[in-house]
Amino acid sequence: MIGRDEYAGRMARAADAMAARSIDCLALSAGSDLTYLCGYEAMPLERITLLVIGSYGPPTLLVPELEAPRVDTLDGLFEVRPWADGENMIKVVASALRRACPPAPFIAVSERMWAGVLLGVQDNYRHARFVPAGRIMQPLRIRKSPAELDALRAAAAAVDSVVDTFKSIEWLGRTEAAIAAEIASGLRAAGHERVNFVIVAAGPNGASPHHTPGERVVQPRDAIVVDVGGTVDRYCSDITRVVCVGGADPVVGRAWEDLRGAQEAATGEVQPGVTAASIDRVAREMLGAAGWGENFVHRTGHGIGLDEHEDPYIVDGNDHVLEPGMCFSIEPGIYVPGSFGLRLEDIVAVTDDGVEVLNRVPHDLLVV
Ligand code: ZN
Ligand code: ZN
Image 1: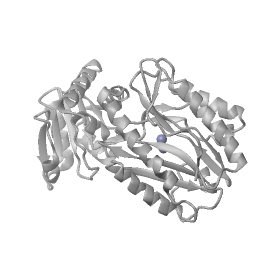
Image 2: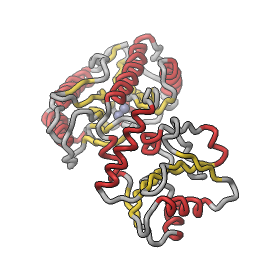
Image 3: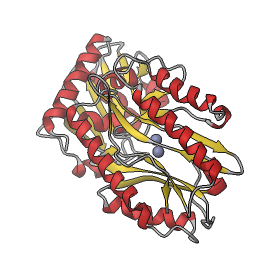
Image 4: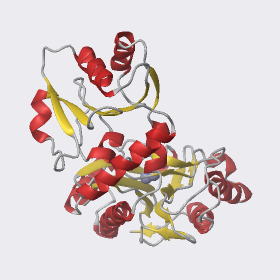
């Protein structure tokens, strides 16, 4: 678990980053940036929750009055200001920002703040200038602390234990939806407090990377893409393996070896000092050389932490240089419309001199 000292350190680093960028106030609405700094998980309601860290006064969490009993201030790390139904929400926010700021401030706001709230606040606070909070938060969150790495290792171990049960699941003759429901229960039983997604895509459905499990009944020789993830102590898991029922079709078997080679080569390139784009390039060039270039239709990976998808994105054009503590997926895929799909995904962490693969499940096709 992440403790009070870690949250206090994060708040202090946010304040330093604000000072370095001449930001007078940081205003974070419901979302993982807010959770990252103060540990509170706000519901994404129409009523606003807002963490305000400004030049004047202590950090303050505006919360809907009915949510206030859920807030733990971590021994006074921040103050709580409940606001009541019947108060004008926009005016509550504007006056909280004014109290925290010098005249004509620069205010960094959550990218995911409701547009209706931000537009209203801008109307009520004409001398403030607003910039995206990602300028402060992204550099803090992109490198994981030792406690966060432990949390991500625990999430990976939990999801690995679910994949280990795949060999005892009854696949043949059941619908994707029924199998997905069983796997979702397995994720909860393995310690996930939340199931974020369960993709079970059998046969030709595997060619749609984010297929919604449906009524297709699993047939002999189906290749089934199974991509699952959830949250353990707030940190996310995410893994993809492919199950083959009764043995793999020869074309699928050959494609899998190409995919496995690309995934493992891209993983082997991970180290401090290389760019995110260069990892993507390794996987893309290998699949291209094997004749699958047209069939690899997405980026190679995404960062992971409090969010399933966050920086750094392992994608062409992202020249962000990898540093120790960054965590992301490596998940190339091969998608042949009307025929089959394959994806192989692990979560990795950049270490001081290379890479740590957090998922430990072997890379073989899981023949059941
Ligand atoms: Zn995934
Ligand atoms: Zn993923």
